[in-house]
Each structure stands twice: as structure tokens, then as C-alpha cells.
Image: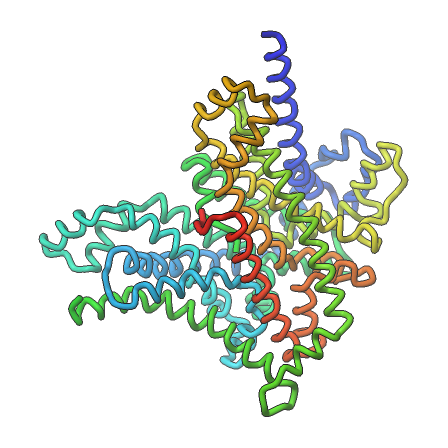
Length: 277
Length: 283
């Protein structure tokens, strides 16, 4: 059995090495964010101090939060939360109708939903940005939130989940006098918390990460999203790298925590139910 | 169904289908219409398409995107599969490391681009690694030979863990008895992978192949932030080409034509890949 132990140890070492390789850039981001001003490029000939903060300081974090980047964090939080709340309501209602109600044209509506997620959002930003401009919606929360709420993938996933709820449940509820909305809100939603949470995570992370769309429709400082703000910080003539990394770390931390907590509570299935658009 | 029932179904559906129709399908329709109207023209024609397809910059961008896709998709899927097989084990902490490899997908692409961009500077930490290995300094993002490969590394760091997660889920669904049967028949580890694992993973692989291919057609943030399509147009992927046309050179008509071509390519790829993999189901 000694060979088996050797093989297992070897496999374990390979696993740890791969894991560390993927974590290293995130760790390096944090370490650089903690360096005093002007030290981002000091430790480039590799040593222990390339990946450990020598004189750690939170000054960079404080500086970026107080600057325009702080406003971008607030904008992104507002837009992402609004997207989750409105998007979940809108998508779960449509999913409910497609799963539980029988009506003429259901197949057509379902086909529209499927086609909509076969056309990637990024591919149609040029015409959509034109529509927003002609409606004078550029530089508004509305322009940022609206395109994200009708998410065909989320409708599709929730419908699949709702289909698993037996017909008898809603028939019994109808006999008890519940209307469609009552069945939806008091039976289907409470039975689907896990599916709703994974849908919320998909909507939240997609919006938190969005870059191209905010770049096109919300360039004004008052509506700037963090993904855009950070790219602009790094492109400045007088770029302060330690501050860019502090901003990068703040920007990454929220979705990282959301994903991490979701995985701890619900397991890997939560990550695979959603899909990047 | 009664009339009232139809009304309540419509009430449930209207917000979502309204948003999808108005903000997803209507723009696609507008793109088609505007792509058929040449600048200052009043009648429909294919002028924008002829102009676009004869434009060397656009041709170059299509070639670059094709080359990039042919490299990035097989590499990412092969690595994701290798990692999935490696990490599909009950060894202690393997669950933690699976999560660790998945984490980069949560980070906004623009942040990953900025951070890797600093690491890939001529005086950056990557060249620090090269120096420690005794290798000469590399130009990386500023070199026409290396820039596309650099983007490939960045997007792979972001995406591989995500695709791996789907494949691990698939691996865990394969019944242990299949492997036992294969061992009884004298199959070695490689044969077990080839004759049990791969066929059983077909559905997940199909999904990953399609979703990864589509995602890679749409790569934008790293290009726009790090290379702006250069050096010498070597990283001018089609999304950046469309963006440049529409918002830098203000040639909206040809940008719409390019949008239509991109969307058509994406749809065709999705359909072909599902046919080839013999599976119409999405995970």
C-alpha cells in the first residue's frame, strides 16, 4: 500500500500547488494594497517580501474610499441591490406563469425567453446604448438597472425549479381559495428559497462586475460604477498603484464574499446553476 | 383557460417579457435594420456589409478573434477538465481548493485586467519570476508576439475555475460501479478516463464548450484596458473592434453591421456545437 500513499501525497501536493497558483494573484493584490505609497514596485526581484507586506498600512484604503472611488462603491451597491430586488420579482413572476399557469401562447413566450439568452447582452450594447440616448436615459440608475432585470437565464432556471413543485399543491391551494398571486407568493416562493438565492447571486455578481454597459451609458461621476472607475484610475497619468490595488481589492471583496458564503451554505450547486452572460 | 386566467398570466409575464423584448430583442432588430441603411442612405442595401467585409481592420479583427478562439477554448477546457479530475477527490481540504480555484470568476474582469496589467509590465512581478528562473526580460503586453497570449492567460485565470466547477459536478454524478466494471475488464487509468469519464461527461462538456466559446467571443474589458487592440492590431478582438467603430470613430452603421455579424456567428456556433455533441439540453 505504500505506492498508494505516495500517489495520494503526490496528488495532494498537486492540488495545493494549483490552488495556491490561482489564489496568488488575489493575495498579491491585497499585499500591494497594504504597501506604503510608492512601494508597489520595490520588491520585484523575488524575495519573501514580494508577497508579504513589509510595513502594512491601511492608508491606501482610506484614501480611495474618500475619493471619487467611494462614490462609485455607493453607486454600484445601489444599482446591484436594485437589480437583485426588481430582477428577482420580475423573473420569478414570469417563471411562475411559465411553470404553473396554462394559457395559449405559452410556448411562444418560452421561446422568446430562450432566444433572449442566446443573444448575449454584450453583443447588442451598441443599438441599446442608442435607444437609451434617444430616451435621454444616459447617466441614470434606470439605464444601469433596466437591461439587467429581464434576465432570460434566470427566468429559465427558476421555471425549471418551479416545475418540480407538484401540481396537486396548487390545486389544493385553489380549493382553499387562494388566487394566482397567493399561490405564487405564499406557496411557490417559500418553497424555492435556494433557487431564489442562487438567482439573486447571479443577478448581483453580474451587475457588480458590469463594465461595458456602464462605460457606455453612465460615464458621469455621479453614476460611475466601480469596474469603470478602477479602469480609469489605472489609466491616469499620475497613477498611484498602491491606491489602485486598494480599490481593486475593495471591488473584488464584495463578490468574493458573496460567492464564498454561498458556497459554504449551499455547496457547489449554487455556482453551477447560474451562468456568466 | 378563462379570460380572467389569461389576464392574470399576462400580468405575471408582462414585466419580464416586456423587458426582454424591449431591451434585448428590439435592439437586435434595430441593429439589423440600421445595418442595412448605409450612412445618409434612404433605401436598404448591403453597402455596410460590403464596406465592412472589405475593410482590412475588420478582416484582421475577425482573423484575430478566430485565432484566439481556436487557442483559448481548447486550452481552457482541457485545463478545466484536468483540474476537475485532479480535484474530484475526498482528500482533506480538496473542497477548499476547489473553491479557491473558482474565486477569480467573482472578480470583475476590469479589476483582473488592471491587476494582471501591472504584474505584466516590463518591470512587473511576472518578469521578476522570469528573472528568478534565469530567463531574459520579456515585453509581454507590449509585444505583438506575446500580447494575445497574455490576454489568454488573464481570461483563463478568471474562467477556468468556473468551467471546472461544472465538470466536477458532472464527475460526481458518474456511478462508481462504472469504474469498477471497467477495472474488472482490465482497463488502466487512462482507458477508464477515455471510455468511462469522457462519455459520461458529454453533457457537461457540451455546455462548457458552448458557454465558454460564446464568452470568449465577447471578451472586451482586458482588451480595452490593457492593449486597446494593439500592438499592431494583434489583439483587436471583435468586441473591441465594434466598440471602436461605434464610439471612437462614430461609424455607427458599420458597427451595427458588425454587431449583426457577431450575433449571427454566436448563434451559429451555439447551434453547431449542440448538434456535434449530440445534445440539445442545457445544464
